[in-house]
Image 1 (cartoon, rainbow, N blue to C red):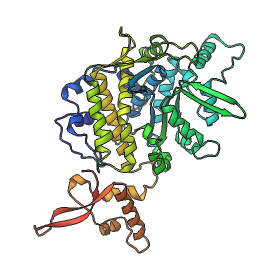
Image 2 (image 1 turned 120 degrees about the vertical axis):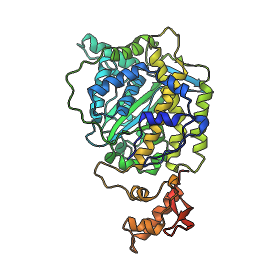
Image 3 (image 1 turned 135 degrees about the vertical axis):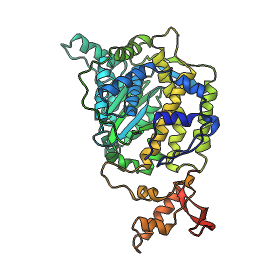
Image 4 (image 1 turned 90 degrees about the vertical axis):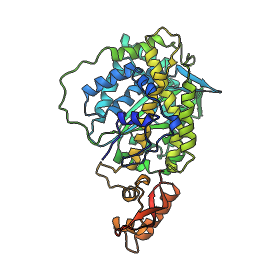
Length: 481
């Protein structure tokens, strides 16, 4: 089975690369105008030194955790340190650096080890006050954001008092790193918790204020709210939520980066010896959060700095935006369920470029972060990695021991478009052992739905029989052209 690596993503990103797909899942290639040149890809290697150092050390400390997991956790820490104080102004709106992500992997693949390391580095960097509790009602989350629960107990040690003061100053700019995060989506459907889904959607966009008025608590207001969220879960726990069409259409999943491992299985590495976390890793986050960026005086006055775009960045961003948000979305290449995510890919790319630029700016003499071509190129590769991860997650078989859905089983037997092969409905029913009179209607309804969702298409291909003669053969194939 072929899996994607960052090197392969890089190859696919080149203008001169052929638009081919040899994997067991569809991954529509970008049009040529939206791919990066060799020169730009080379520049990607020079950006994001802190993220490289974080990923390299994390790979030594927890070598059986997928590199993609370490990467998104590192970016989440960077977004936490920035805390809504870096923005990019486009038209009448602002982009901020907060990210929503979901790490979805097999049980026992060291996801939690990566999380524990990230939380330890956050603690060393002084970012603990930004962290939210693991369980919150919508009302509890609003209480956290407004800072109403930050009364000062007596007898606090100096470091405890400083943490509390930081929490007050940044009460509305928070992060939620949640292991076993499927519980979060369970809450969406529970009585008394249904407002949580809508609140999370709004917080992703960092509104100027978020307020509420209740009989019990009166009027509450959170100024400049911002939330970064990194959830960690298994495929089996997430399966029920990934199957809910409403989540793909109502904007929840569109805001998330889905991160799955590109390797079939991790390399075997025995427990490494005792390691000290390089001081540079938490120290840079601390300098960025509490020295380089402007500090709020209270939770109502959050200063911001605006990033600058270097020459050519707008053109590069527009090319990617046109390819993903317009051309692919309005083609027949992808299923309907992917389209809301594709429309958010350009936003994820520029947010990531902002994060990389801010990290590199921390110890520079520039007055504001500047998104250079190197930052854009590295963010482009990461975003393409996440785009492929989304397809891999939804189309590859579940390896957690849970039985695959009938849709996944059917797709496994339906040829890809590139193979120039088709399968008939009768052949598919035989392969799925669904030939009897009771089961065929179920399969027919599934095929009709997959056609409607544009997962598959009906087509006619040229076929050569055993006798060497050519003829037309009609049937089903996956929809990617």
